[in-house]
Length: 259
Image 1 (spheres, rainbow, N blue to C red):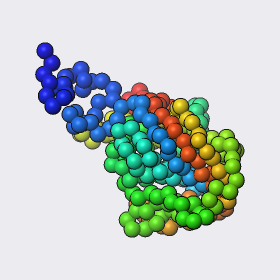
Image 2: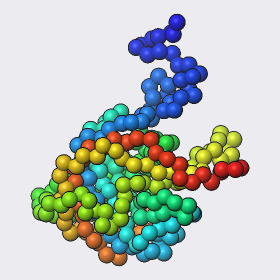
Image 3: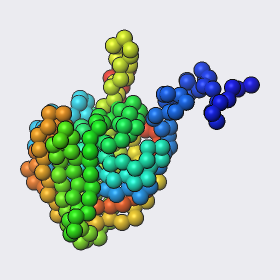
């Protein structure tokens, strides 16, 4: 008979071997797939940057496509497991010579420790703790990222002036597939995982979408160096509100395969 206390079953070796297992086993920190985001508010801002900077930041064999960058700043109002929090994801269009394309993320910032752990352990996303924000201030939408007491990113757009189709965002580049560099070591220091991973959101329902001009300000921070993607030309912003589900992704490239 399975031993049971405090409303939970004692962990077994089979449980530990299963996908989606997390520690502490009696109060798991990292959520298993799938989990959902409800009523997320998002400000997506595009700007033109230096193509040489993109090429430098892209890990081989990832190849940048174009010269555009975007940042998504999320106010996650109702997230399974994790609860409410804020997130920022910096992306640029990219492809792999062997096939596969999407948007590579050099930087992500979250206010949720659980979100940071999930992103790093499962997807390989380069997430760090920070204080992203998204506010309505009169006739302006203001969003950004603060870390170490420095506002490393500040973006603005007018408040809901022009309705838009969410598909219009893809005219800049398609960010629906997110590419990340996953790196995890064994306890003895040997590399355990070195991969380019891919993930998509499913069950996406967009409740509203608005389009407008944008401003983008970047301030240097050695631990949050978004300034390395300089703003040559701010393009436009999209404010949208949506529900979506995070599901298992794919391995597009394995650096250790055959070793």
